[in-house]
Image (cartoon, rainbow, N blue to C red; front, side):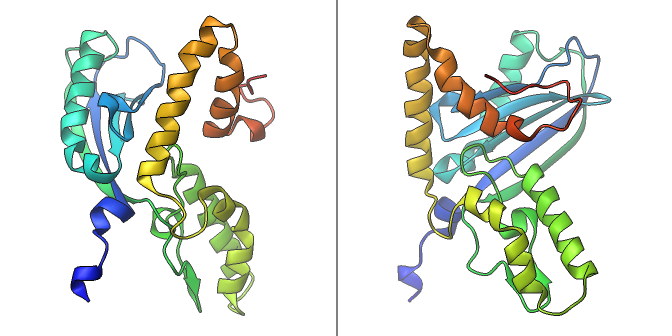
Length: 222
């Protein structure tokens, strides 16, 4: 029985590692690189109130090398002037990130939200939005009483479940192949003046620009 189990690290989890730096900010841009080092994952640099947050997240066997990928991203950002040479490491944090939905998300009076429920975007690995939406839904459901909360919760998060896919549907290898095909297609379309057609749906979905609040300084790509 034990020999027939799938290797959980490779199939069910990715890894995320983040470094927070206190430093001067030469810019306030958010920088994201997909398929960093040609591996299934991405790295990012976000401005914070005290400096910058540098992070990396990878899937499959590449998850075991997340620290090495983050090191190379840090070196690149410093050499490119995106990250100041004078900086102080304030905090290091990390976690496993589920690739698949668990078999049970809600049962009786137990409701899973966010990463615990596997609500990560299968394309980008982003989970903050889904964590906030599922947490809000759980709070509203429990605030309405304890009569069948699991059923009402699953009904409330149905749109999120459709986005991340049914249990067992996502596979790191397929996602990597899709991302490589997508990013390999964009340069050719750029030469034809059609790059926007490929970028538009990806950017709008990744950054949820289709549901921006009124007055947002972001805008949907058209």
